[in-house]
Length: 318
Image 1: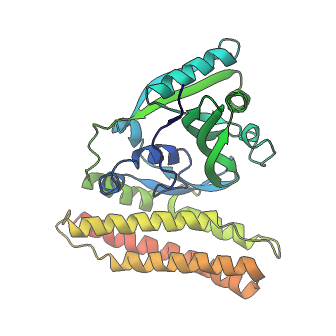
Image 2: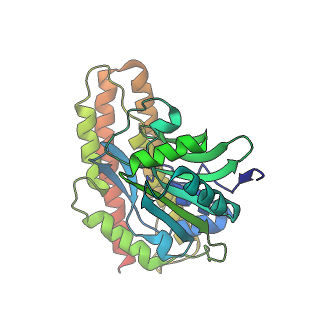
C-alpha cells in the first residue's frame, strides 16, 4: 500500500481544547475564512480539570456531530481477545484507504518509550491521519507530555499497545471523516447570546470566569523559584483572541441592531499578551515583585472580561 497522508492542520485557532483540537485540525483544512465564521458560532469555556490537575478549554455545546461537520463513519469496540493485532491492523488500514481518520484515547508512554508523567488514571486523545506501509510509520497527533500536544511518528505495534493499555479490557477506534458538503460559512446570533449568558451565570468554581480565581490561588501557592506554567495563559490568550474575532465579525456584518464596541475587547487582549510576557520574564529571574504584579493582573483581566460581557449582554438583549 502506498503512503497515505490525510489533510490535517496541527495549528488550529484553539490548540488547548483538550478533546476537540483534533476535530478542529480536520475542519481547518478547509478555507480559513469559511471555517472561522463557523467557529465563531460556538461556545468555549476556560476550565480547571481536577482529574488531570490541568487547565484547558472545554466546549459548552456538543456541536461537532450535531452540526454534521464531522461524520462518524464507524467504530471498532471489542474485547482484546477479539480485537487482536492482525484483526485491528486490517480494519485500521481499510479505513485510512477510504479517507477516514482514526481517533480515540491512548497511553502516550508507549509512543514516546519513556515516562512522560501524565496522569496514569486519565485517557489522552489522539488522531491518526497517515501511514506508510513500507516503512511501518504511522503519522499522528496527540498529548505526549503534560500540557503539550504535538505530532508524532510511531509504528503500529507501539500504537496498538498504547490503545490497549488505555481502554481497560477493550479495544476502541473511532473512524471519522470530514463532511465536505457541510456549510461552514454560517453564524447564529442566538448561539452567541447563549454563550454570553453561560459565561456570566456559570457558578462552577472550575469553569469560566471562576477559573481565574483558581489560577490566582495556584500561583500564590507556588514555592520560591518555582516557575509559572504558561499553558493557562496561552488559553486565556486563545479565548480572548477568539472573542475579539467574534465581536469584529459581528460589528462588520451588523449582526445585531445595537453596535458593539470592540475596543474594550482589544484592550483586554493586549493585557493578556502583556501578562504572558510578564510570566516569561518572571520565569527567568523569579522576582517576587513581578509575581505580585502578575497576581494583581490576573484578577484585573477577569474583572474587565466580566464587565465587557455584561455590557455586551445588555446590548444584545435590549
